Amino acid sequence: CIGVPPSPAWLWKGINWARWYGEDIPQAIQQSLFIIYVKNNPFMLVSVAVGVITSLKALWDAINRSPLAQGAYAKLIASIVPEFPELDRANHVLVGSWCALPDHGNMSARIVALSNGLAELEAGDAKIQAKMESLRAPADTRLSWPSGTLL
Image (cartoon, rainbow, N blue to C red; front, side):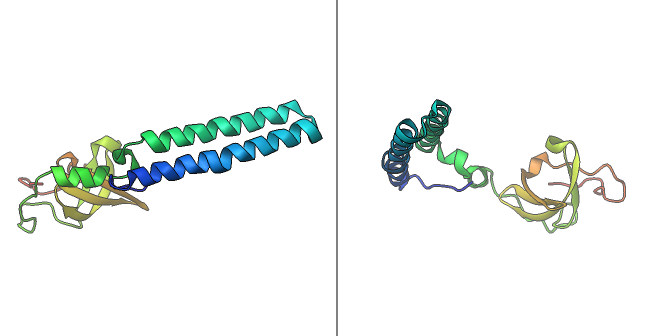
């Protein structure tokens, strides 16, 4: 997903309208005429109709989707969550520590970065962002945090 700033939203909507009216509809008309006058296959008309409907659905989504649905969620959370205190003291979780994520079935992940109340995590090849308050100490005693550890 990409984030679309609100200022050029009118431009994105205009591009989607132009693509629908200038590309998808003329193509559907041309295909329909070919099917009716050359191929004479009504089932193919159903395919063209489905194409027009899905194109209309894509237009609807492009016009009505909020910037939050387009990838701005992490930036929003980062701007709302207050800055956490310094994280280099001995009683705080540090970059490189392991944690468990209850929202992901207690999956273990390594903390890669901490910023603005968000933790960037690695779990295998997956990159995950989570609120720091949602992190938990791993169940594995070799990876668990010392008592009194703060987020």
